Image (tube, rainbow, N blue to C red):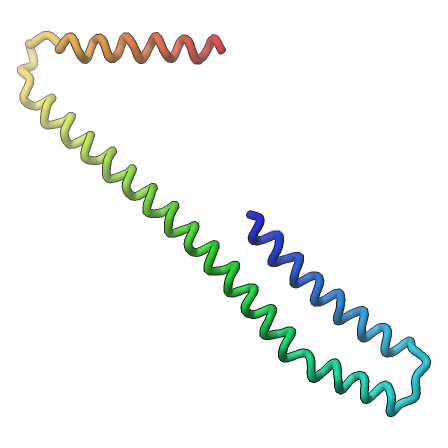
Length: 123
């Protein structure tokens, strides 16, 4: 989020500086040759400004891309864990006979979960 803000700020700063320079040149009481000389200097500086802006945008894009890849990898790992847990739970459920009583550890876990859920609601 801060990367987007600083990139936008930089673009705004460059555009504002360019608009200010153009306005200043048009309004300033200079002779034609002097104004053209100043315009030529400004035009010569534009490639450097464009290169700086381009590299800044590239750096911001790389940061955003790296963040997206990290988030994707994390989400994918959690999804794989959840799928594997579901597969294992299904295998265990298929091994237990239908008429068998549930294991006490499962009942205790459910009861603890309900207890903690009630505590969280109270807070």
